[in-house]
Image (cartoon, rainbow, N blue to C red; front, side, top):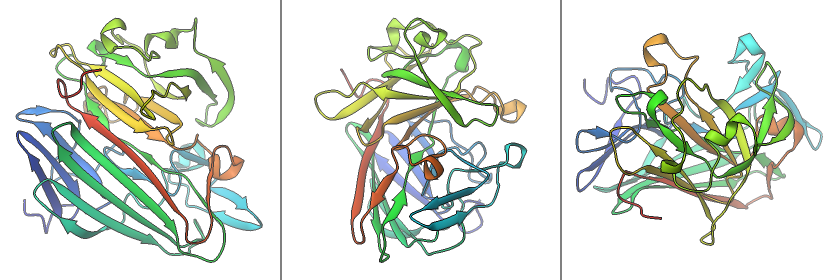
Length: 318
């Protein structure tokens, strides 16, 4: 299928050595990431519509917003309920929008999207994202600049799935550097906090290597973790170890990403379930636009900067 007719728009192919990533115009989505014939991320084909939010950018809020309603400094927002069964707005408003390609090289692409004031988000915000392949894997840079004349509330997340391999999620080992789990209600909205130590979530919460963790087995995850262990370089590191690989895939992020959502895909279409494990760096928890919890507030003209990335198996030694 040609790039002009792909459901996700123009396809921006990045190559470095045997690494290849494809960034789609729609949503500035990380559609695929492979090393040789081995998928690093569980993505989707060029002739498909993105399912399960695979590789999408979640802005200007990640995760869920109760009833699609919020108010910030006297300004109200009303977003479409795109998770109608739970009466939530989910994952922001840019993941289905066409992003403009600003700059492209063999191994890097920079795209941008300007949010204009609208009922769901009555602010003007410029989003710029760069994907770059290098010797250490894939690095992602996001900048968000408030272009309006008032303070602008903002949150962002990313939704990559790390490919689970032939044993699916059941046979993977996951290490997420978190001390606390956010307790979610039946609408997947926060209602409290739980210390992870001594709970079943010890199986996935560890600042150490994934090889020291047990396999997920039948454990179902759609959980938000926080109080992350940030290392001396200002980043946290999560690992996923597949049964067919001796070394883990590493997902890292700056400390500005204070939350990790982990999802094993059990509510996706039957053929898609547990093919990947979503490890989602987020700056704020679900419902942050409404609660204000860890919400970023940009002054007029100010810019937020966040970095994260993925190192395929064997490219990062810790």
